[in-house]
Length: 143
Image 1 (tube, rainbow, N blue to C red):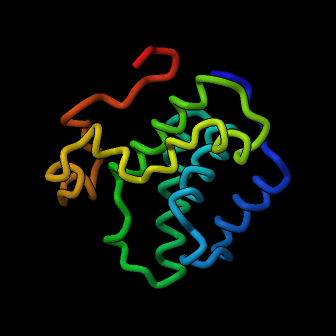
Image 2 (tube, helix red, strand yellow):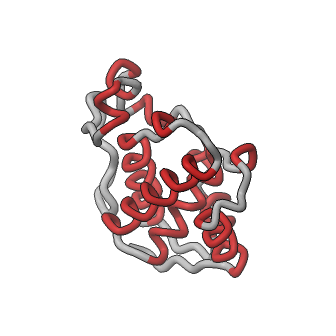
């Protein structure tokens, strides 16, 4: 994977999210992408997925959001997508990364990999389900 740095703002963002001081209204799709970038800059794929899962579930509990809001397949798939784009070019921060890869801001992009029926199923919410339309690209492999 390319070299990816974190800004002090990135580190403060991760700490604030993990401490649940970010309010749900401020945790947008872009913030999800940013958090995935931060974790992947610090850890390997599986560790990043585990940290993302734990942080999101703690965030839901802390803010009184039903646990059913958590979606395992989307969580894993987005970390994998961010990882793929991180393999294209180095970044100096999450802001730099997102500016270079603005297509990741399209929250509907997973529907190019999953049918709505599969992605929004109870099975996909509770456990990771492989894409049924097109595989999520792997870093270092052309799409």
